[in-house]
Length: 312
Image 1 (cartoon, one colour):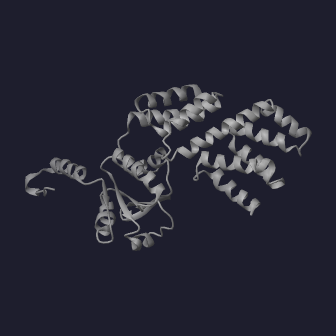
Image 2 (cartoon, rainbow, N blue to C red):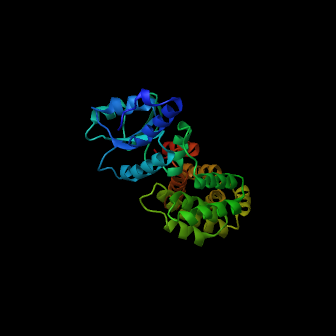
Image 3 (cartoon, helix red, strand yellow):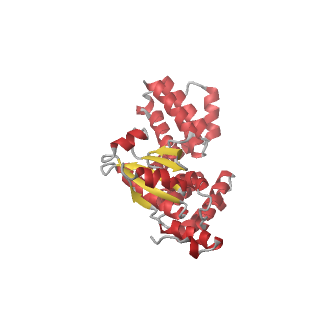
């Protein structure tokens, strides 16, 4: 990299040259004990450093790695990805209290500012990193994705679906968009579309398990329909509170409608009364929703703990 000479540049030129130097720096690189302080701790004074603790034998690491690299490169020169092979750098892993891999530590100005573990969806990683990189460029598809999320959260599934379809028109292999559109199609009752969209999700993608959980919800939809819908199931519960079949159907209806808290609460109540109900159907239903919502969801954290306490 060429050195800068103060005698040859005015104030404006200095700013431009500094930007060019940042762009020339590697955005993805390997680090070890010898260069960690220079490349990560000192380097984080100039740009955000995402540290990926991984190992060659770790399948989730191989899933997460390319996603991290894609997100970091998309966010621009204000961020970089440093990869640490824990098999070769156990002291670094111990210093950062890495207990399982993949483990990601985010360093800014020499300080640990964020962290997460396990393979995560691209959208969640980008949402975590983008606020840390003020100059990160906003891509049109990201704006469209945010619009789609807001529309779906507001109940406008028709327009949300149109937004996701626009994303997929340009990026047909966008696993995040495939999953979110499949969620919407399930709410709309189009189970064939759900199956087709989920089938397109790469089995190595973080969204794959959530997609498979959506297929489980198709079964919930059928059970709900057999009982005549959520209102009919609720009436049966009012008439006979001990009717676990009606309660299970009611929970299935709630899950299909996206009311996961109600669904988890009623399935847990069934497990508390009969953990072997229909060969563990209520427990399995809860686990499917856990996969669908993701480990960082507050409901998942709460109901995983309560399910564990009930079972063990």
